[in-house]
Each structure stands twice: as C-alpha cells, then as structure tokens.
Image (cartoon, helix red, strand yellow):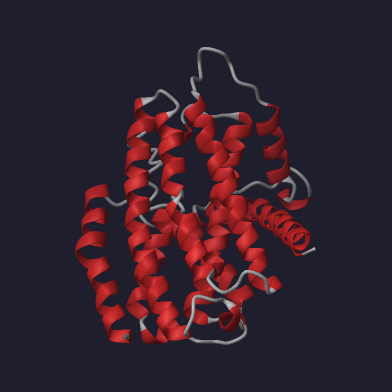
Length: 296
C-alpha cells in the first residue's frame, strides 16, 4: 500500500506542478510584455489564459522533417533522462508532504541534481550539431559548479536543522537567511545557473549560439525540454523557500522566488562564461566553506 500511495502522490504532484508550469509560462510572457512596454499574449481565451495550452497543442502536432533535424539515440536518451529526473523531483516533493521517505531527503535532492549534467551532455552530444556540443559542455560544467555549492548548502542546513530531513523545516520558520545572508544570495546565483535562466543560461545563449541544446529538437522532445526546465524552476523556488526561510509561508515565498526568475530574465544582461566560472570557484566556494566552518 505504501508503494501505491507513493506512486499516486508523485503522480498528483506532477500534474499539479505541470499546471503551475502552464500558467507560470503565461505569467512570465505577460510580465515580460509589461516590463518591455508591449502587449503579451491576450488573444487565446479570456485575456490569453489558454495561450499555454494552445502552444502545447501546436508543439505536439509538429513532426520531424527528415534530413533537416539529426538526432541520435544519445539525444533521445538525454530527453528521457531529463524527464525522468523531473518526475523524480516531483516524487521527492510529494513525499516531503506525505511523511514517507523524509530522513535523507536533502541528500536525495543532491543525488538527482548531480545527474542533470549527464542529461545535458546527452542532449547536446547526440544531435550532431557543433552549437549543441559547445552548449552541452558549458552547461555540464556549470552544473558541476552548482553541485559544489549545493553540497555546501545541504551540509550547512543539516548542521543547523540537526538532520537531512525536511520534517522540522516544513512546520517551522528557521530563517536561515538571517544567519548566513551571503549564502542565500550566492544560492540565488546558483539556481539561475542550474535552471538555465538569464543571465546564466549558458546552455541556450541565443546571442552567441543558435538556440544551444534545443537546436535539433522540435515537437514532443522540445516540449519535454521546455516543460522540464520550468518544472525544475518551481522545485528550486520551493526548495529555496524551505531551506532559507522555513515552511510556514512557503507558498508565498515560492511565488516570490518564481517571480525572481522572471525579473532576472527581463532586466539582467548575460555574464561572460569565464567570469561566472571564475567567481564561483574562486570566491563562492570559499565563502561557502568559510560559513560551513562558522556553523560548525
């Protein structure tokens, strides 16, 4: 019964998060339109509420044109792996609220995050495109950089909370952000990189690449890549709210961090890749290690 309960909990969480993704994409397009003094989507449905579902239908009915898009089994493996990781995120999210499997849940987040680099490598390497290859190498190395910071944050939180469980975090306000505010801001930079968002979207930097990883993808594979990216944005917005603020106002703080992704895309210029990597390895990691010893 517990296995069946876990399955339906994960399925229910996946459906809810995908609904959030649909309306988050719509709200992002509307907010970007207002910030750039133009109209966003407003034609499909009432004030454009059905625009995301129309876009989903358009992407699904598209088909691959032979000899114009070239992908190998490795590219398909990257798509399947990314979808699998997104589903695992949803399962862990559901289990945090169900009471099951909560003793080492933060470590499981770290394990799932460490596998995202492999999916990016498979996506770019398997499409026989030099832009995708350059993009996947940069994205994989950026993911490794974020994993190092994520590991330090998990250890710091475990030292403060007393365990790797989310049980006490969900029902209390620890306000870790007041103890280590520098780590919070460095964490925000890291999740922008992990979720491939401007100004750190090095896997899809359109100004220097031709769409990056998604160059050879359309239809259902592109829809999976697009939806999983926004699903991971929601998961990390929720995780940021829990780790640094606690679970009392987690809904409002999750929305706040989701809006942060939109604001960053609308206002911040893209940073040079070598500047970002140099900053993360020379300064951010050292600061995380310093705060780790400070907490100990």
